Image (cartoon, rainbow, N blue to C red; front, side, top):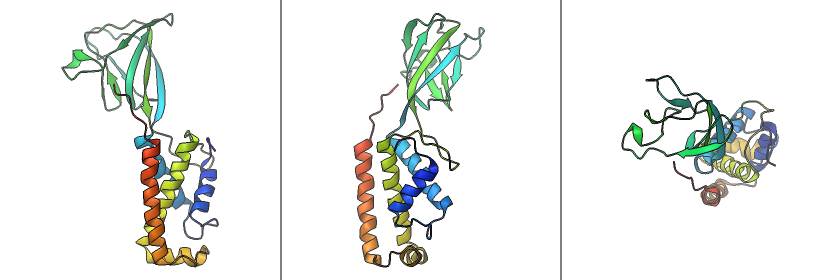
Length: 212
């Protein structure tokens, strides 16, 4: 299940929505549900990531910084010398000014201005990142199986909740998708049940983040 493409995920979500032939929701709409689910899961079950950066100490007076690419929320920075030997771990800022430790602003990690790093050297930045948004049918998710299952729960809950506020779409789903056995009252109960499932998924998957 892990490593599924957008096409595979869309097929699974359509099955959950009881709309296998796309009579009610277009591919674009289902894709949006999937990607909003990816964003939702990233908020409480982020992807663990490591960014390795070759580092050369800037000239005197320059800003010591590194742009974050693979990591969005760092919690640890390790320093290695040119031979690959571990030297130390840099402490995060305590809030007492720039010399108290590293800080992150606008996707850039800034190091204390009066701190000298081995040069040349390597930094290993440990942290968290969001999951990849899927833009093409062959794009593959980097989520694991539990996270993919949560996306499907989210997509179903979000889609059925929209049907409650759109009578035309609900009637279309009843007739064209072959769900005439589901009344408006039943749909309301299904939507409430799905919302409860969403809350359970958040509790089940929530990852306690290590703080920098």
